[in-house]
Length: 331
Image (cartoon, rainbow, N blue to C red; front, side, top):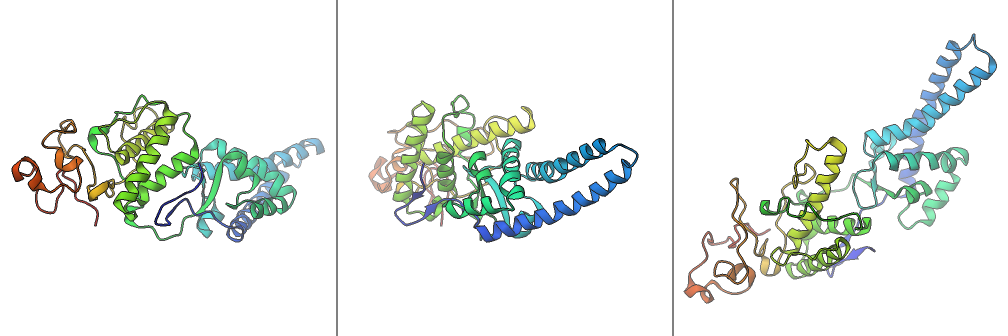
C-alpha cells in the first residue's frame, strides 16, 4: 500500500534516515568493529602460536566472521535495530510496517552488508541508498527493513491508543497472515495521528482502512464497532500474538499488549471519541448498546441535539461537556 496523505496534507509515513547520517553511523560501527577485531586477532595469534599455519588461518577466518559479521547481527537483534553508531546518531532499523526487527531481518542485513559495505567499501550501499526513494540499501530491500530517525519531536499522542476493553480478544480468530506490511504501517500511523485530523476526515480514513483490512483478513468488519476501534483492536491483537511468539504464551494474554499506551479516543463524526462503544471502567463492562436503541441514539447520530431524543432526556451517564459514550473528546 502506498503512502497515505490525508485531505489536510498529513503524510502517514515514517521518517527515513538519509545517506549522511547512515554513513556516519556505519563509520562508527566499523571503527568499533575493527578495534575489537584487532584485539581478538592479537589474542588468537598469541594463543595459537604453537599451532600450524592452516589452523592459524582457520582461526583468523573464524574471528573475522565472528566479529565483523556475527557481531553486528547479534547487536541489531538484541537492541532491536540500534547499534552503537545508530544510537549515537539517533537512528534505528525497523520493519517496513514500523515494528521492531527480529533475528532474520538482522541476518539478511548483515549477510548482504558483507558484500555491499565491507567488500566494496560501501560503494554499492551508497549507490543503492541514493537511488532508493526511502534511502534503503540492498540489505534493507531484501530484509524488508527501513532505517528511520528517532530523534524527532514526539507528541504524547505518538502511542497507539488501546481499543475499549469490551473488544479485548474479540478478533483472536482472525487470519492476519495476508495483511501486507504497507497496510499495517498505514493503520499504525493513522492511529497515532488521528488526533491531528478533522473528525470527518479521520472517520473517512478509518472506514477506508477498515475496509482494506477486512478484505485482507477475509472476515467483514463488525457493524457494531466503530472503524477506528476496530483498527486498534486488530493492531493490538497482532501485537499480542507477536509478544506471545517472542516471550512465550504465558507472558501476554489475548488482547493485552505492552506495546500500546493510553491515548486520545478514536475520532468519529461530530467529535465523539467512540460511536456506539461501551463504557470503560475497572469492572467488567456490559456489552455495547445496540444501534437504534434509545440510549445509543445520541451517540450513533452525531449532531442530533439531546432535545430531539426521548423528550429531551439525556442518556444515562451523559453530562455537560462529556459524550454519552463516557469518553472525554480530544481537545
